[in-house]
Length: 472
View 1 (cartoon, one colour):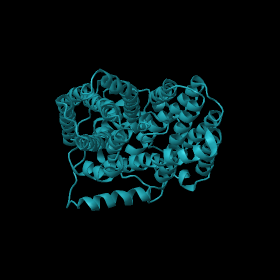
View 2 (cartoon, helix red, strand yellow):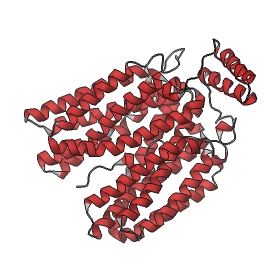
View 3 (cartoon, helix red, strand yellow):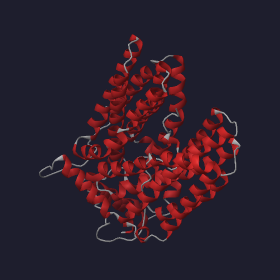
View 4 (cartoon, one colour):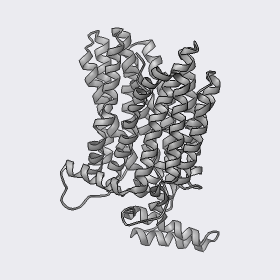
């Protein structure tokens, strides 16, 4: 039984988001008052760069746009609310990554049944498909801080309950299935709320740097969480859940310190939850540029899931070890971390269209040698380069998403992006498995490379990718 896919370390995985092009009536973003307030001082600073008068004019413009006194924009590293939000969400994410590995390993070691381990892994991932849409609507309706605090406390309770169950010696599969599903559901809500809350604590001009830090944190949690979870399981079945309990409580303690509202107030009658979900779907459908980027990312996610399985099969057929497979995937995650750290640099110098087209072309070139290589270090280098592109994508996409989506829509916009990107990955291993049995690793990888090349060509000639709403 193969373990659940390590989606977070895959090169094309995670919410990509971001762009630039020309505007039309349907694609024009609804910029909120907070964003207009931060945009005004930026414009003033550009007009008067290099002079004290220009800085004073910028501050005055910011005060007028915001309707209040001018406030100094502090460096991101000294932004207290962002630091607390970043750290609290990071601890929760690390705990979640550790238990994501621990759940199937715990069941496999206790029962010896790969089938039962797979069931628990599926229960943990199922909320990624079932909870995204209603979760995004809830994040836009409810207080986002309270959602994160409630989700963190809930995850701590689940981890404590599983630890107590394992320590008691009475382990029921149904209980672990339920715990895994609840854990996954709360993790989705926590992640959606945190993504939507970032623009409320960071000025618009610092969003690229903030989302670079978030993406680096996500990649780092993935790299550290997997060996942490498996290592703690080796020490004792309950250890990873006790550690997760402590991590979630520490996360809640940090998030308690975040001040102010993390979303704008919604006025007027509130529609029911189904109407909110429908509104989000309609809004996303009208974002032609965004839909084109989502389609490209969804296809690349499918192809990379298939590529991962093909590499595992090729290494196994070449009498390689599980350690070699782990090395390749770890180097992919490391490349993604470096890409995330440099993603802000790329996002401020190139349009999302250029990054999408260039990234798809680079991925095509990097995929082809995988068909014939079996050396884990050579494969790891190729996967690290692919992961680097994925890290840049995710930062660039994150900046675009928070700029193009109005505050009242950000939870639903992120949920749809994550649903499309994550849901598409489920088809990759299944399709690649049949292809590998029929054609073998070499021809399967060549087919995946051809599909990636075709995706790049379609993106190049796509009319939707030529009209970026942020150009307005």
